[in-house]
Image (cartoon, rainbow, N blue to C red; front, top):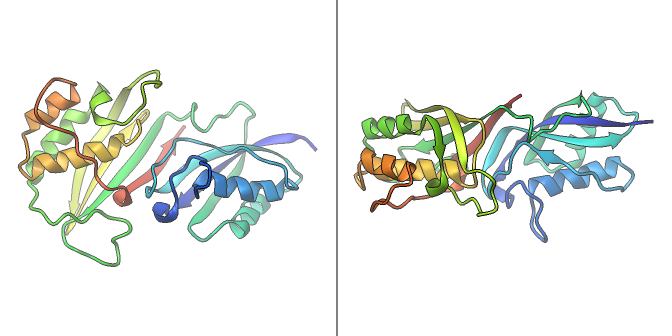
Length: 245
């Protein structure tokens, strides 16, 4: 047998997870899947590398991760075995063999996040939407979203530690779309910082409810001094939608 690299596509409900990244005495997606992989590897540890870290309570439809495994099992069997061993709030949609040089995080070119905001209360969707009981000016939302496009230093709209090498991200798509009583924000970028999407969404909503102007938002985005403070939207409305390579 020989060690091979595998790439998996993962969906998870983040409600009961303390995020993606492994943490001591906390339930995380990475640790949960690594425990299942260890069972496949005769009890030996397996390291799983994701395309990015999602916060506690954030969901994913298309998280990508890779791992190395010495096995004779084919990819379909590995996929079925992982799904049989993991809890019902995670699901592996696809497992495929990858080149030994493939890296789920560093090789990713574009990541898409979608934030779901519901304009009227719903018990059924409360785990997957933000439901603020406020009046929202959608024109102001659109104006703010346009300012996000392009390359920016997102220092003022993220919780990235000072150890991060760069806080600059390039945003290819930033738009709000309304469908009946649902407002969805889609953002596509080359990379994202800690809590960046939630802070963008929360701060834009503050502007759209009259707590500032689009110009205030733009100044914050450009790290200029001003009175506007960033606001972080709750995690349950956010989904890592897909990752492109």
